Length: 231
Image 1: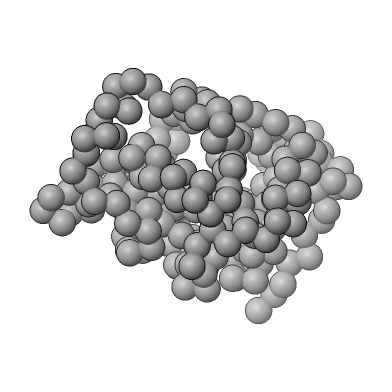
Image 2 (image 1 turned 90 degrees about the horizontal axis):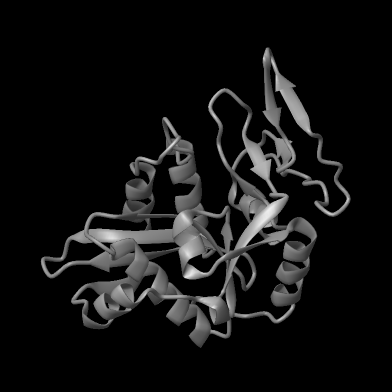
């Protein structure tokens, strides 16, 4: 097993561009390339504000974005229509009941402006091992027939939940998964989560972008509180 010695994001000089063969890529968010997604490497990465995100044709890139999306629960805005549906939903919501099926479903989500998914077979296997180690977690949404209709997964980075992906098969299922997660995290003393990259969905809910230094400060200060987000 090869342990990656990640550069310190605070001191790392992020290049504007990096080339592989005849192609050039914006590298202001990328801290390094290559290495395996072992439990140890993933744990070290997330604890330092870094996460992997596969790009076809490149050695595995590890990201620490220049601009980071975060959702502070005090800023959470739930649209009236969603709040109404949330109060009357008959869906059953659980935590860590079927991590593998959640990440597999997330890998099949069709996304605008993307021809494939970064959640490759290697990612699924790596994050499933990460889940078994107690670091990666899922929220599942079940309908009355016991079918999995939505969910999300992410990583506990030492007291900070880092959201990775979500999916839905029935209306609002992934949104309910997020609201359920936030309620759970608040009970454990958390007051924010890392959304990594801003999306229209998170922006509507009240997420904001902060710069890399602010995020790393926020991450470190929260980790120092030794919150236990999951049993």
